[in-house]
Image (tube, rainbow, N blue to C red; front, side, top):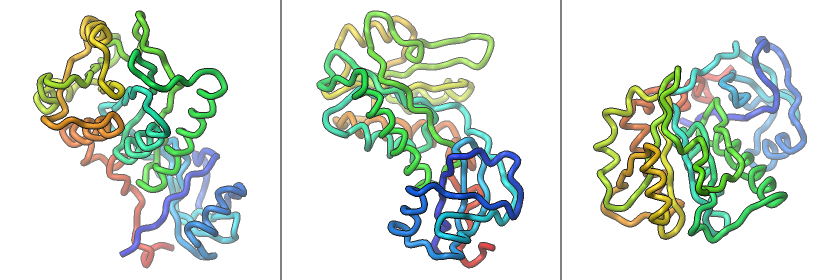
Length: 270
C-alpha cells in the first residue's frame, strides 16, 4: 500500500481550517508535477516544519486544499543534537539528510583542527542554506512534522561553543557525548540519559578529534563514547549514534520519530 507524500509549506498552519486552500510556490509546484508526478486530486499531507500537519488534496498544479483539521505533533524527548565536524566535498549534505530522517532535532557543523574544509563568510552561508534545503526534503521523505535546526558553522577553538558544554540550569540538563574510539560503548551510557533534556553527540572529522580537543571536551563535562568495534567514516558515525540514541531512549515509539501521525493509505484519503 503506497503512503501519502508529505509536502512542507513555507507558512504556518496554526489557525488553518478544513477547506482552506493554500497556494504553492513555483519550485514546490514544479517538484510535485515533474518529480512526484502528482495529478489533480492526489492526496497529500502538508506540514509547516513547526509541528503542524494536515491531510490535503491537490486541487490545482499550484494549490492544495486541507481535507481535515490541522494536528500538532509534540517534539520527542530528549532533544537530540548532532555536532558534526566538517568533511570533504558535500559529505555534510548526506549527514544532514540521514540525521533528519533519523529524527535529529538540531545539527551544528563545526570546524576542528583536523577538518580539511574551511567554510567562512558567504561560502558558509550558502552551505547553510543548502543544508536547510536538504533537511526540508528529508523531512518530506521521512514524514516529519518538524524541521531540525541547522546552525551556522562553529569553530572548535580554545573556548568551547556553548552547545558542547554540559549544562544543568533551571531546566532539564544538557548531556554532551563525544565519539572517541575505544571509549565505553554508547549503549552503556544510555540509562543515565533518559532524564536529560538534551543529548548532544559530537562527531570528529576524518582522523577524529585532536588529543587536546578531546581533553578540553572531557574537562568541561563531555562523556567519551565508543560507537562499536568497527572504524566508521565520519559521515556515517553520526547516523550510527543517533539510531542507538533514538531507539535506546524510547524515541522510536514517539509519533514525531515515527513520522506516522497522519500518514494514511492513498485509498483511504479524502
